[in-house]
Amino acid sequence: MTREAIAPLPQPDTADGTPRRIGVEIELAGLTEKQIAQLAAQNLGGTARRTSGNDWEVAQSAIGRLQIYLDIFLRKEADSAFKEIGLKIGREVIPVEIVTEPLGREGMLQLSDFIALLRREGAKGTGQSLLFGFGLHLNPAIASAQDRDIVRPLLAYALIEEWMRELHPIERTRELLPFTAPYPKKLIAELARLGPNASLEAVIRTYRAATLSRNHGLDMLPIFTHLRPDLIAPEEGKGGTVSPRPAFHFRLPDCRIDDADWSLDTEWRRWWRVEAIAADTTLLSDLCREWLAAKEGLTLLGDKWVARCDTVLHGAGLL
Image 1: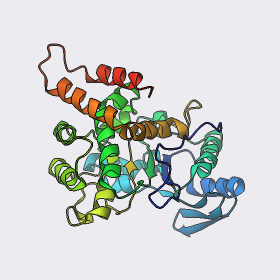
Image 2 (image 1 turned 45 degrees about the vertical axis):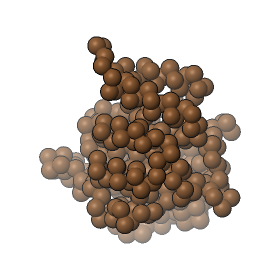
Image 3 (image 1 turned 120 degrees about the horizontal axis):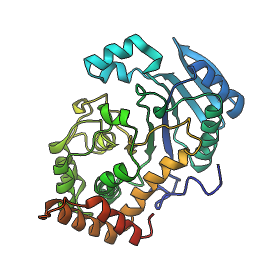
């Protein structure tokens, strides 16, 4: 991993001047919880121990506490047919999940090196089987609770989501599973009309009217329930328990850990671009106008939004 990787966010610090930190969740197969914990302790320091059943943790590693367990989310949330297959096949479908504490840039670089080690030790990612649908989730802390620091990254993601899915497609398995559904077109349209200077309350009400699902590429319910539980309560989320917290929950990325050309930085760059767009109000306003024109105007050959978005981002120097 080069030192140029994991670029600092356009807003690298929180409102109180402390560096923003990022929690990471990694789903993979090919190694057991025990094997991963022991490799982590050997290479990152700390103490590996079994906590319950097959759950493990590594305490006091170089990047803090790591939790390692079989992800039972698929058992709880998949439709009944997939659930039955999953329970029969077990580890062939249900991934082991590694969950980190919130990390600074140096911790992210160390985690990236550890991911490369897991690849060498036989870890498998989402492309290794038609039954795998593994993701890598990023949880960047919000810069502040000000409306603009929540509204603008959400708007930027909503506007470029289709472009990201087209130019950097996720694995087909994950598309078929109900965990990273695209935002409803109606939601994106309403957000585009509200624009970069919308109030958080207006955006939450708009989001709530369109979806209460957690199963989107960017799940905003943790932030919304943390900041405004009067508008959305944690128990109202559909697709898993909502844990309120002041962090974005970026679920879109695949975990392609077995691919030597893939890294943590590959997926970090996706989120970095979202925040770079959010930091440029003029660009964000232009994208709102262009999206509405492409999606709501009369065209004979389709809306061509992906091509138009690509052109705008190229012009802004973000590709």
